[in-house]
Image 1 (cartoon, rainbow, N blue to C red):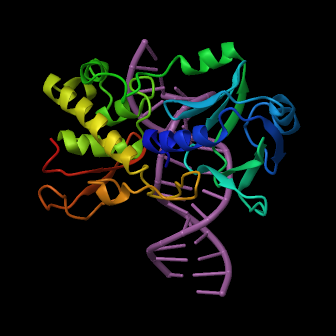
Image 2 (image 1 turned 180 degrees about the vertical axis):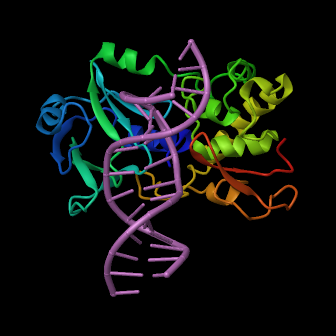
Length: 269
DNA sequence: ACATATTCCTGGGGGC
DNA sequence: TGCCCCCAGGAATATG
């Protein structure tokens, strides 16, 4: 599922190919929760020129001079460049045709994702609540964000986009394993040293994954239809029952914060 | 105010 | 082979 490294990979590729281009045409195959819907969406974006593609948390920001389209892939969304001969398939939602005849398919099996047209004010409001970007903030700043009185699990805190932006289920489990902290631990019981380690390991795992163009545990593909290469480097996610890469004991699989959660009972206290 | 549960959606896999 | 059930999960919304 697309988290920060995957969304950032897609952002870079989109930015390289469509920034400065004008949206010439949009074909809508399946509407959903995008706002405005269908024809209104098309009218709101056709003819407008993209300044660039940015990212905040897991949200893609297709910038116009005045406002933007916000895009979220959620679990199964993808943007893939296609050629003129491409014919849409079952889960394709929209086709964007840009100046220069660059063609982009937005697809989403589970229909959770969205594209949303926003004004400059709405853009500011929509992005205001997110916590710091983990690849931009310092280790100290991130560690400070994790210092809170909350009794909820540290995993739930890591998944909270208003605490730190961009971490999802895969990298929450991975960072916790690297830091030696059990996902179920109450946030207010995580020590200052552990917060520092967690902050460092969040940056490390996101940086390493980004270098591999993300993790394709299930459906994720980039704009060239390619999978990310970080799956082979995962230490716990998706490895329930398999040996811990540190101590060889079996990885536990359970549910924390309503999410499948993987950890080593020996390495993570 | 905070914590937890529900909801959206579809494909894939296990059990029988 | 087919059918049923459960599971995957980001984050808004509802409930406690």
